[in-house]
Image 1 (cartoon, one colour):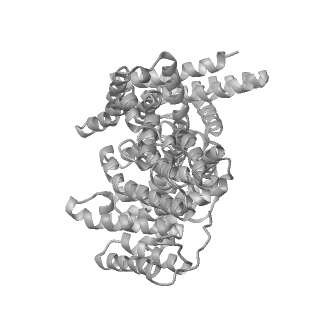
Image 2: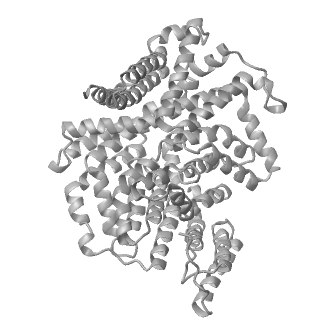
Image 3: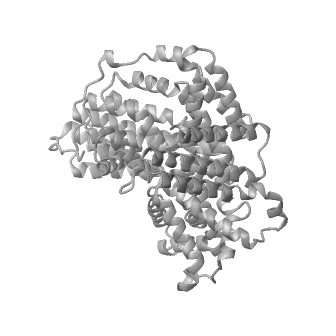
Length: 619
């Protein structure tokens, strides 16, 4: 019986058509647009789960799941149906709505648990508990106390809470970007990008690993999520890396860290970038422009680390017979990639992200008709809709659940208290505040998609940095980076777990090695806070020296992490090189000269002095 999976695909089709229709003819009032979006996401979750239960012969479970789907739709869609009545009461809540809101919250948390696991749900429950019983606590963290009706009103009614800005971003910007990405995938664009990446790098040492880095950075322009990048490019790159001589855990780690960085890659970044644009009220084009230099430094460092790993492991270039023809791929499917510059072009002339995405979709649909190999047949279009639904689920449910947390933060004022705590613990030291913020971001982001993790840290931690005088954009870029890095940071590293499924290695081992390959991503955010020029702020002439110095420093960080420069580095030389790298990235002529001197000294020592004993790589 295929009726439940068919209905799930039908719900995904409805989600795509609804999103395209409202993008073309005008979005509905906030709570209506967001409520319908969330309702469709909940339907898809429970239909997927019910179809699995049916295949296992558990009919009562199927009935229970479908009942939850109905309750979820009633809760999520309530304000869309009774919009005028709710608005006319100016947020006043009826007794019946208390029950509806409670059921909506319970079903939302259950759907979130089924989609992205317990981490987000536990956080939401902790915040709800704080809303109800925070008056029993002590000191500054206590509040005056709120009853069930007041909390549920804040969480459920109006265009705040569950139906707040984060879900609004998912229901408008993100879903259209996901549709565009799914269409590009359906036309074979990802295969073309990987063929180009392999052709560009295959003739050098460690070619497949470099192809993973290049391919994942290009794929970031399509998907913008770490796990989907791993599952897309990793199925090609990880087996290629293993065949070329990379150990399985190294291959998985390279793919995980390269795919994580895809969320940084303009022009189409991850969902968190669109959330950032909305939260700090900055045009998305400014966010994308600010991300260019940090993304380039990140991939330069990862590429350098991959090259050094290949050199010290004695790996050879790919055989010519293994390399695809980039020319053939471009001829057969390269035309569909023109949809990406079309998207950028619409943004550049001043259209909104939503409108630019819509027109890029129109352009792509036209381009796909030009060659038979890229035709979007009805079967492919159904696959695109299904892929869109699957990709939107974690974002829609995570942003809706994050709305619960934000509602409690707004109601109780705990956000200000958290920010004050960071400022107090740091003693006014910006560096210590940055360290505390990154640590809290990594902890809060464990097991969460980057978008959900960013919402939390943007609400709780970013204001502390702004209070210490950090530029608003730099503060949010800092927490964005920190939230993103939770995808490769043990113990819960989603990208590493995805890579482990393909490579067949232990995910914890992959996560640890991923941190080593991506160590520069943990470093760069500190420096663009100190030097706003690394976010592209300033005239071009003022950017040349700091960017060039930071690029050299990023490569030196990779070299120190890998323990290899002109040869194997002993620990003393590694520490010296790392210190020099920090000085190269740090703003200032004197520190840059000192860093360059340290780098030159380490290189000269290796070239002209007795070489240090080789050190085994921890990988």
